[in-house]
Image (tube, rainbow, N blue to C red; front, side, top):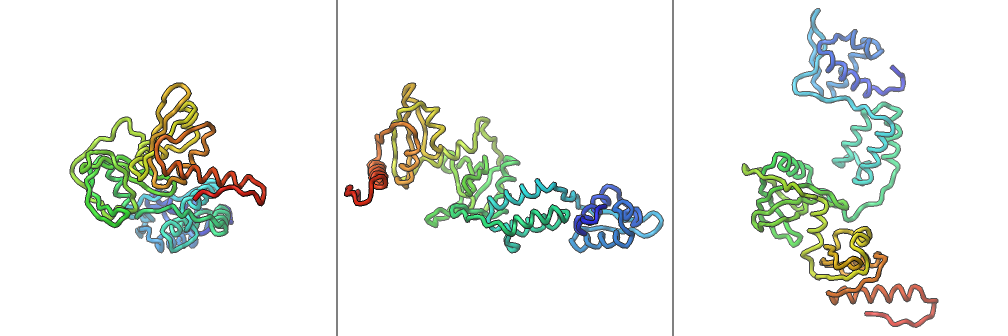
Length: 327
């Protein structure tokens, strides 16, 4: 075996060998590892210190075997796989280098289990990269998410405790159709039996999950991401209707589905129907449409559009020009 392989990697390889050959003796294990018998016993000791039950039986028919209940494969990553994993975790979870963080601690264990040359590269990226925090990201409790995913997989109804943004708490019976991650936030797309309608709940606001006996079937035409984005576009404070002078297929490529529902009026005209609690953001998204449009409904959107237009006009004028300021 190559001398640059870490003791932890050798210990994991020893675990794989013991799993594949129950009852293997220390001298045979040493031979397969390419080390001395003393070193092989040391690697078995490393596994035991890590809480892995390696049983040993003395005598001519004795040897090492893995204790009951353990079926852990060794971690064998290429350098590219390891770096890809670290980069993905950093991209989605910015405490990846903090050993006291749940994900950071788990990633640290993975890195320590890698062969030394691979681990060195992965750990360097993990410790020296400085990702910008995603202020909108909210990660729910892993046990809550696991319970919901289990209920979805087993097609079991659940009773959830839910705390609204305003702090109101209630219990709701739902059929958990899907767990969806969108822009750093985790959502439960479900059928609410209280409302007799599709609903979306923030998983970080779910306080309890109780598995019920009733079962359900997921709609065969369910598109979790599309359904979530369509749901997030309705029910807000300001109702909006926009007429866009472009084909619906062109518009769909330019704006997020969270803006609302697109309807074809004729071959070259599209209606957008949605709602928002942030007219300024909504108008800025509309401005990305490379086609003329007009705001049919929503005075607040018109005001936001006028304000944005004046700001852009002022930005394009030379210093000292006297354009009116919209208030």
